[in-house]
Image 1 (cartoon, helix red, strand yellow):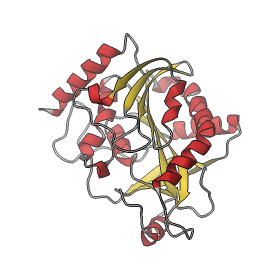
Image 2 (tube, one colour; image 1 turned 180 degrees about the vertical axis):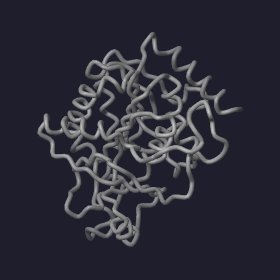
Image 3 (cartoon, helix red, strand yellow; image 1 turned 45 degrees about the vertical axis):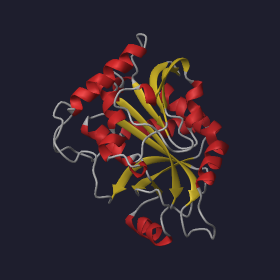
Image 4 (cartoon, helix red, strand yellow; image 1 turned 90 degrees about the vertical axis):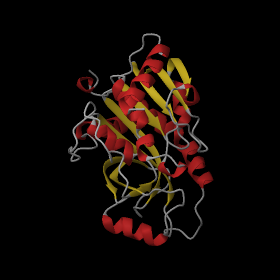
Length: 279
């Protein structure tokens, strides 16, 4: 089936469940961060399994449902769990929900993730505003025929992460007394963690954090001219920095440890999200 027809069917199904709500911010919650959705008030909850053409989460820590309701006075669409290339999905599948958000009229996207810390001056539990990203992975979510209704064939990525939203996040962190980092996120496909040599390469290339998500979503959002903010929870020191093996349990444990701080930051950012980016 044609992509735009699929998107239209998905949009109609979700709109039919919204009971008149019109979400203005899309929020994707990464590994270990899904409980943030519990703060959404007057929520409508839709399982991914029930949504036409929607992928399904297979990763621990990803509940696999949409939560739509009020958060800090704004109507948000929250994804409790995202889709990853390493799960066997195509890059087009990975960004399908972002395109659905645009079809629903959402212009602002808030991406969160759990990431490995490459910057040796930082520590697990730190939160990092994504200022830019590095994608050396060959596959691109926009490969193939271009859906002209969504965006131009060739598009600018200079401000993939909106500079005004970066400042909004900085001010929110300051208001809440939260130490915040700013840096560059580098995409690796996973599911294997990176090797020490790859981490040395990432650091040399200018990365502060590494992870297995977010970048495809940011690319799709830029294609559709959405206002995008990204924040990483640095859940572990990347391979080779400490003399210890890596595991997914540490990712989830660190996410659990910092979730109150993370939640407070997310709520303050949404509360102060620039109004002109919501219309």
